[in-house]
Image: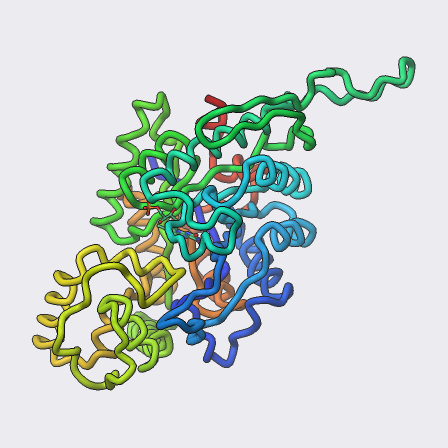
Length: 450
Ligand SMILES: Cc1cc2nc3c(=O)[nH]c(=O)nc-3n(C[C@H](O)[C@H](O)[C@H](O)COP(=O)(O)O)c2cc1C
């Protein structure tokens, strides 16, 4: 059976995917930017709008990292405001389970689901660093291995709170003067190793009964958490082989939780560069890569692998003669990529071999190794590729990250989406009103209170 493709729009984040030097680039803070991207996504009938979150400004070598944009507004506030200027688009936010409290987060998501008439989505992340935790009362109080334990019980607790209202409690009875039909409405009591709370939940049942749940960690524990509890995964693996391996892995974990293959969607992040022809797009992609990785950025990214101050090195020169400093990571703080270098010495060996074989400078090497656009080509080529990956079970769709804020999705919406629609693999109109409906997630919410 031909699968339908799911598409989401990621508001470009505070990393070097986003090209701020482009003349078309605008503010990443002003509300008009969020409105522009969300309304483009809705015009293109996307499933949802997505916000990542960073709870502390990133630092490198003890200083604020300011080669990309710095700072971002609060997720709930932005999504609630967007609910008023969109009608059907899902509104998904990344909210941390390590530093927040379930009662507060449940109130916020239930409220967002009400305000948006059933369009809320929650990307549950654990984050990992004590550096971020310093911003919060308890600091970096949870060791890595306990974070998913807390995430699981955090989510179960939030679901208990959502379920503390069944949905039929409120009925105005003019005769008797009684407004609340069930005196137990909102009652809850939850006690475990992480939380000991009881009382009354203050937000009546929301249209979806709670937000759609996304998950974004890639470790074994993260995948297990997703298989047990999530409706969708925001994944890293956007290529055919890596995508298929990840897809088979996480879908294979569902059965033991009594869940079906179609109960969990796999949605990798993906970038794109379009052009009139494939050759034109490739040329534009090369320009974009050089905008994304300036000489200074190349040195900063290399420092994250080397775990050392390399500010004296020439980005147009060769790699340092010494090897990466192994041990506690001290150079870069508050960013995801730091942990992706799991074996710095092995990576450095590969990079040296590549640089030598192709005679690459530091900057050219970083351009080649630090990521590239997933989809490069004329609109027909890109539409074909996206459909191919989805039909080959490398994903169920993509969370697209445009490299220009806020207008970077327009070209995709105008040229690629109509081709997907012509093929019958992407909706031409919304058929439902809630995010669960857009994602084809019928039936019970997963991971209910347990
Ligand atoms: C594609 C992707 C996107 C992520 N986005 C965020 C984010 O916006 N904010 C955040 O705090 N963590 C983000 N994370 C990381 C999560 O915090 C995750 O919980 C963390 O990687 C620890 O889990 P792991 O060990 O399973 O990877 C992301 C992870 C992935 C794979």
